[in-house]
Length: 214
Image (cartoon, rainbow, N blue to C red; front, side):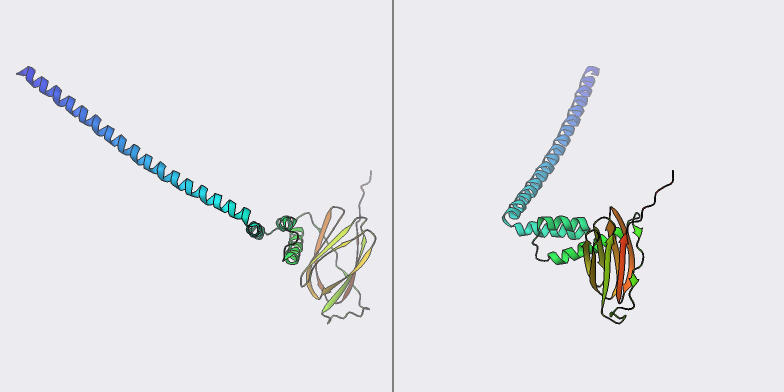
């Protein structure tokens, strides 16, 4: 009787172990099936993404104007002088080129004025004997370049202009009267200042070098 009981116990334990093993296998198979379904879903999503990218690529190849639009949006989002210059290098005949060139000058002025290495520009000298009065809607600035280098002067205000003056030459610049941010670049140095223009002015740019004593 004792042997029969022990045999039954062994059979019971074996049955429990087999059932436990079976349940574990079923559980693992269930996890594997779920993982397999997730992989199938991910693969399907990747195929759809690749298909969409391929369609967009083909669309851009067949529609160059869309490439231009995308590059325009990128330049607009970055909105720096370099970003807009890159855009115009790709599209030199862009319909709104003049507007972009105007924006480039404004950004160059802002960038130069915001640079800690930029020097201070002295005020312009007003010509009170000129026919331009303070009530005039336009102002005139005579600029002389005595820097020994090519001089670039930028105005950002009611008018937006960029003037390049060769060495030793003078030029008259007509601007709408009003407040301006002004920058000058020559010989690798930048200078900036603000000016309210309401008449006739003259400005002579030169580089003053200071030499140490030995």
